[in-house]
Image 1 (tube, rainbow, N blue to C red):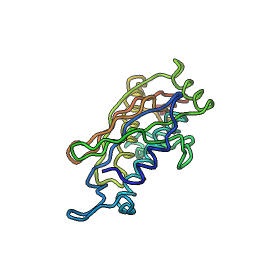
Image 2: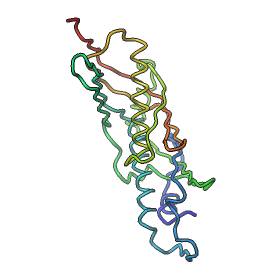
Image 3: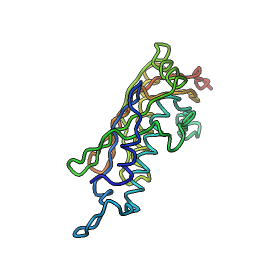
Length: 222
C-alpha cells in the first residue's frame, strides 16, 4: 500500500530531459501502514518505522546518485602482517546532491512478493551532466564487482555497496600491480545504478565503476 510520503514524491516529479534512473526496494513488512485488523486511513500519519524505511532508502538513493555524478574519494591501506599494518579503507563522497533535492523523485512503486520496489529518477543540471560525461569517457578504466553485508548492519545496503566498491577496486589492482601497494589513493565513480538484492541473511550489491587513481606506491624491499 502506498503511503502519503510516496504519493507526495510521485506527484512532485519532473518529467523529460536527461535522467539517472534506478530501482531500490524496501521490505513490505517495514512499511505496513496499520497493524492486522486495524482500519487504515490515507489521511493518517505514517508509522515511524515506515518513515524511517523510506527516509533511509532516499538517503541511499542520494548517496548513489552523488557517487555517479561526483564520485568517491578512496584511500586503501592493504594489510601487511609482517610490517604490523592492518587493512584500512576510506570511501567518502566527493560531494552530495542536497537532501530533499526536488530533482530526485519517485517515478513508480510496485509491491510484489513482500517487497516494495521503488523506481527513482534524477535529472542532472548542465554542470552535473558534464561530470557524468567526463566519467563515461575512455580516460578512466572500468571494472565491476560484487559485495555483500549482513542484514543486521545498521545500514546493510550502504555496507554492501561499499563492500562491492572495495572488492572491485581490490580485484582490479591485483590484476595490474604485482607488488603489494603501501597505499592507494584516488577516485572512483558508479557508472550505472547499482543492483541490490537479498540472499539468506545477506544483502548483495553489484556495481560498475570508473577508476581514477594516483600513482600506486609499492612497499620498498627491506
